[in-house]
Length: 266
Image (cartoon, rainbow, N blue to C red; front, side):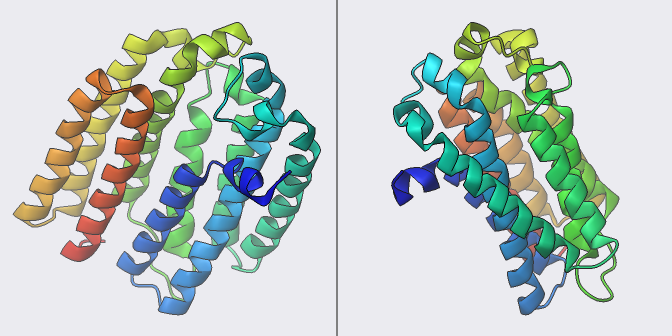
């Protein structure tokens, strides 16, 4: 398997978005440059581990439905390579997490285990959204607890992260509902269907906006930006191509975090 296809198998766009958001949050929470860089590295490793595991586990289903965007559907012989990469990345991620000490390591390992439980076996169950809620809430808690003398993450930010990534799960699943039905995946979005998944995602996005504004109490300009990004996702989620809606959500999440950092409310 070529290095480029191996990289594509880690879900590079969401992996990069999650890693970038983690770095911004680390800066916003007052971590030193050194600790922020180490946080970015730890989170980046976890994204490789989870992304590669996801593609290795789903390789058979992706091949069955002809997912041209999935490297292992095009090159099924690379499954062993991706699986080995996932195991190695997971081992290195665990070592990196443990180096942070308690309680940061505990939060990070919770996020990692929860994400891998989504890959198997929870993806095909009604509780498929739970690992998203748990993993990203725990990730924020890790960032807040990392480094000496860290004050911890504010509760409103932990809750907002969970709500936002719950919406991301629903939006990300909508494009693949037909393929998932053909291969027997019956997670929450598949049970809800496209219309109700988009409706629930909209509710979660509005709730995210309310929590961010009520919790952070940002200046008026920042509150307006957060409000506009949340409201903008409603028509995007309803009328844009599903994959475009998911990418838009990643972009708007980056904008919101950057605004909160610049406003100095983290």
